[in-house]
Length: 420
Ligand SMILES: Nc1nc2c(ncn2[C@@H]2O[C@H](COP(=O)(O)OP(=O)(O)OP(=O)(O)O)[C@@H](O)[C@H]2O)c(=O)[nH]1
Ligand SMILES: [Mg+2]
Picture 1 (cartoon, helix red, strand yellow):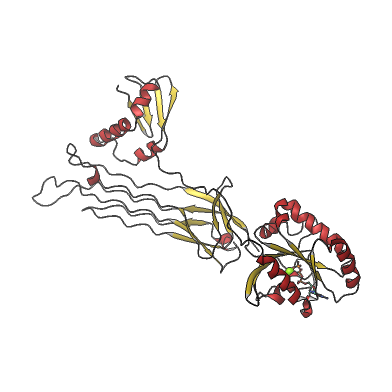
Picture 2 (cartoon, rainbow, N blue to C red; picture 1 turned 180 degrees about the vertical axis):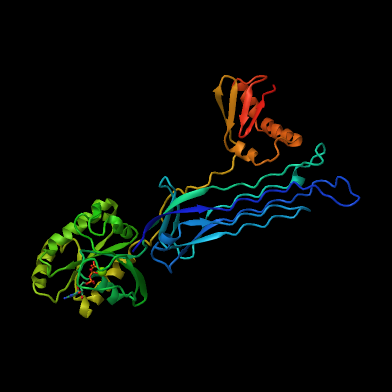
């Protein structure tokens, strides 16, 4: 199993409610409001790590919820903050919202991104004390957070990507030049998920990725499918490995065209990547003859390195060619994107909709904000509510929309008669 694209569900913690406690003490009547604030909900934090290179863990766990903030208490005691939830993802994971927009690119080892922020805690009633309202019996509710669906897409990050038909020796090459120990066997599709290896060549190091073998139609999903082509999007250089001996009865010149065709029909942009050709299995019959044919046709366009990988022949020349090419290439960069916030910001916006004759509904962020105030049937509280409506321009807007004395106004769960 290799998962490199997965949907998960994340939720930040709810804010704790503010307390509406009124201070009581022996011999002290009407001690005044002393309700503490609710705690902030925990955040959803993503952290990129190199210790994972698949998204397989998300097959088993798809829900991540941060802790809720605790409610405020008496004597101005503040509610405890909710615990964050930390989601570890492999380096190279791109986080997208349900519209496919990029929320974050987890590009560098150790990178931390707060993907969802915990709900604000509600304020305790002592915040609402005014000279005319000595004992507010209401407090704010904490902000309730929503669950979001996000898609994680792993786009392996490596300097060099190995591409080619199955069984041509890509994994063998990776095992010979790097510290990686991929599975090697004499059949197709031995490699089922990308392997990464770190290559050290004199004072240079770079990362090489071995991608499962491609076949005709790969860009449309044939073989192990085009999903693997995603893993070469974020390389700086491609090394195209050929079985130059044609030991499986295919002509290596056809192989070369075919695989390139699949790569570029997956994404034309990939043409920007330089390509070095490894003519592998030089120890086999027909190899020399095919190499000459290949060089004749492509020699002036590609750097071609003949190799017998199993006996480490040609390694020095290949690593020289790779480091030389990489030297002149820009370093890998994170994706360039306009980050989209998953959460809508709390706002003061509102809209007025005329539902039917003389019935007006106010909707929008302001209403959600107001809905957090409890006890709206409480006299004090209703006064506060009306004042906010006036201060934020809702009353004027209602009047403009045609509301007059006696019209019905709906704000969230509340319905009242408009008084001009
Ligand atoms: N004769 C010869 N055989 C080689 C050479 N390099 C690799 N092989 C053999 O080719 C077979 C396939 O090698 P792998 O490295 O598993 O090939 P791969 O391209 O990773 O294959 P997939 O993972 O299936 O795409 C193995 O039996 C290797 O021993 C070589 O230079 N000469
Ligand atoms: Mg392999």
